[in-house]
Length: 222
Length: 222
Image 1 (cartoon, rainbow over the protein chains, first blue to last red):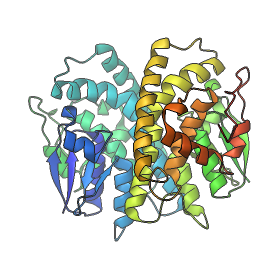
Image 2: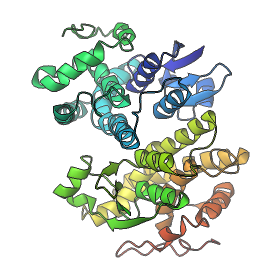
Image 3: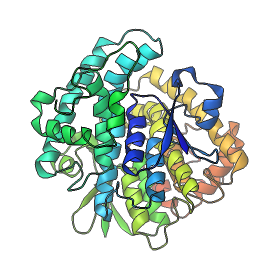
Image 4: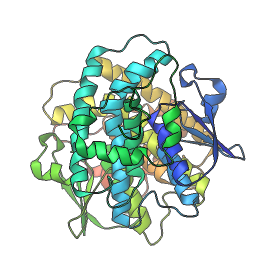
């Protein structure tokens, strides 16, 4: 069985965990304290980031998008990228949007400042960064609302990696109670559908030592 | 014929231009002053970034990796991603490494500070950023040297998107004379091979108004 080296609340690890759940690929989880930069870990991935997927033969795959593309290609019934070429381009555009744009404009400012810094013992969050993250999150939620005015899922009619990437980031922020769902009914309704998927359930029992999740975090009817 | 909206020295645009050249897809080029955030352009790509590929039917594709995957899937003889699944994962890992890690650690500090700021009229470069970019570039060139100790091209035996992504970033820096090739013989030899590919030639005549390229920029025997 493959082993995923991960950090529980990392959106990039969550993206791979959910994708594996959707594709019904069994895997074991192993926590990796990335901030320690263990020599054996850096040898597996010189970027020293999680997720890293260790295959049965010892081969290591890194970078969430490369891992998911690998899993999708290997799947008996691939469905995470969409069926036609233009839809696949839209799914990848949105997955990259959340991984990179949402990642640097929101997740880095909120999750990294508030949770990763604490786990790594790097002191309190920078309040200006947190403020920027909150403002940027509002813009991104508006974009999600706008997409959902025309689409049932983020990239189109079907659930796809776009929903997984977006939901992975938002679920980490939701753990912290940082998402103003009440102001964004379309995003709220979409996230409730996302959260009730069997692939997402295991994430709802993740815990960060010393930081209890928001009361509604694991609640499907929030 | 498809039209690529681009900025001449943008590594992400160069990545798509080279990929289209390799796949022998004809296309027209149109410069897009991204810093103006034209309404019609933002409607095509809400991230307001180049490259954007306009297809014949008016459909717009954004995000360089999504565009290249689309082109590779549509190609009669796809070859940019590698043939077996593990190689494809390695090609994508490295393409993402250069787009994201090299991008934020080197390109943002050097190209964006020195060229994009000038084109957008945003003042002189921040010298601390430039210094950080120079230090980070040294680390990345060492990583490239290390890969090339074991491989003919960056991801393995064959030329791939990993070489295109890396070469696209380095070619923008090379325009500015910012790459210390002489200290990195393996990277130097690889880049000479990269530069002599027919797909790369058109980039060697790009010019930024008011900024002449380094003397060796277009020289294949540099």
